[in-house]
Length: 442
Image (cartoon, rainbow, N blue to C red; front, side, top):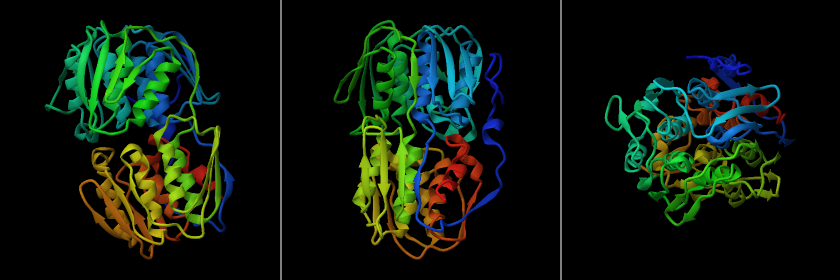
């Protein structure tokens, strides 16, 4: 299952996205601090939400500046296999989606989602609106990632879903027939994607849907979901620990995806750790992306940070300060902070990120292992990591197939020579031309 097919114009594959990468890539330190403006591709989080919502909307939508990556490929591939019109124009930087108005025409479809967590968690509630049956499966790591809280909530709302293999794990079998609606309790401690997937399908339930959620104090990724839903004409009533949606329909529209805040974090970190300046246009104070809070962490570390309506700019200090920070609400930038923490003037402690052990890899364990190999002293608990600076030494860093490990520790290599990244091609999951854009800092 390699290529989106069956719709004119959708002509890219996972292989096209990945291109050719070496087994290892050495990062050359910058000769001088950067002074750069860097264009960041569209947000993965926003792109995949916009694709789902546009597919459920009435009529044709155009999504501008989407992210073309492994994750968005697998979602577009799934939508085509479900009989929904999708046309991708990589050169023009947009995707056209002919929404089915909440109707999924195809039945008896097996869907493969790679290692795309958003796709795996967003699709099942939408698939419940179709005739079924549908299966959703992914790579072996996906079968280790949690899904039982999503299945439980779908069943509470009357959707017909079951496990096709091991209880509590992918693959899932969704039998279709609609979502009757009602109230469901949802645990989002392991992933807020469960809540987002349920919300996006909720307008097409047979009766109002109320989600009572628990497990986190903040829900920034659900905030992105709500913002996309509202942009397509559906209101979500919010109260602490509660989201409610009335039966209604999405309206097709032209929608522009803003730059990815998680992807921007690496370039902000590059400015911070080198004492340089980097400006990210198109990402500003009105963004719903919680990962923009990484800029606030850099401010605590001594950086000059300016967040305007349509840009964010970071200027690094002579020496970073160590910090203590709860990153539960923006944990995709946890590895970014970890990669520059060895250069601070004191320890850095990152707390409340136990859920990152359930992502593309056990991120806390992976970060601790690679930091120790770099020479840093590390104290690791189940939900936190404390990084004590030490002299950084040359090493080949393992990425564990995790795009964020590769991108974050490449920033380390901008400061110290001899840093090599194993399997750099894993960045194609969310940022295929990352290393080219990193080179633009020169």
